[in-house]
Image 1: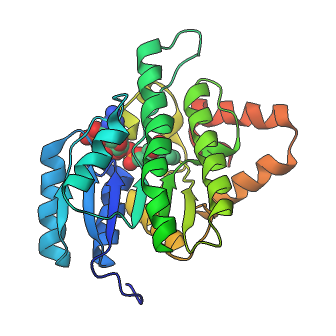
Image 2 (image 1 turned 45 degrees about the vertical axis):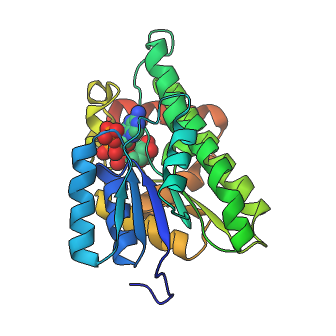
Length: 268
Ligand SMILES: NC(=O)c1ccc[n+]([C@@H]2O[C@H](COP(=O)([O-])OP(=O)(O)OC[C@H]3O[C@@H](n4cnc5c(N)ncnc54)[C@H](OP(=O)(O)O)[C@@H]3O)[C@@H](O)[C@H]2O)c1
């Protein structure tokens, strides 16, 4: 896949134990990157590491970590440094949803979601980006969401975490554009992964509309990152929906956001 020399370069992928993150890790390895993979389920990470080492001849380091822990980013950073690894590409992919009216959702679950979706990716970027800037190469790929473009009633905080990630990605992409470093926000619509089993999503209609497969989303994300794109909308429908949010009245957009939850993405 690669036309550039990626020998000895390393991609750190969070949320690599399933779904989009597992696919991004495999694609990065096929592209010649050594890997550091993290998530909570160590066994899954070990299986992935064995598979990419056998299939792609790269090395893969498994560093299990609960990214909802307050000091998760520091722990991971220190574990990477202790292993003597320089991270060239940081993939902030781990994320969890939470479905339900804000007045009723569980506060602890919400706090954990904020840590996994916002605090830890921000702190990991804080820790790994300066060395990328010093080296004059590398970058960050953040898995945001199509929901980053509009408010999502009944997934209010989840939607807002993704808007944060998109805004954060665009701002830093601008800051480092002359430093040889790129930052990309991957913004998929609904993807068939274990996401559907998390955060009460099964109780919503989210998964009932148009869905994407994680491999094609990961391929679009990685290719967009390698091309230095700032935003990747991995399907025509996602692109169309993101554009719609720019021209429709705000209240209409919020109503459509609600419909994506109740009826899946059938409105697009
Ligand atoms: N699926 C969709 O419809 C969709 C749409 C737009 C955006 N996204 C975003 O895509 C990203 C990947 O999700 P996915 O769809 O691939 O779902 P997934 O299969 O559920 O993957 C989520 C990943 O995040 C990890 N994770 C969750 N909580 C964690 C924690 N506390 N500490 C460490 N790792 C944690 C999981 O690993 P462990 O459970 O092993 O810890 C898993 O590897 C997320 O950021 C999600 O918000 C998904």
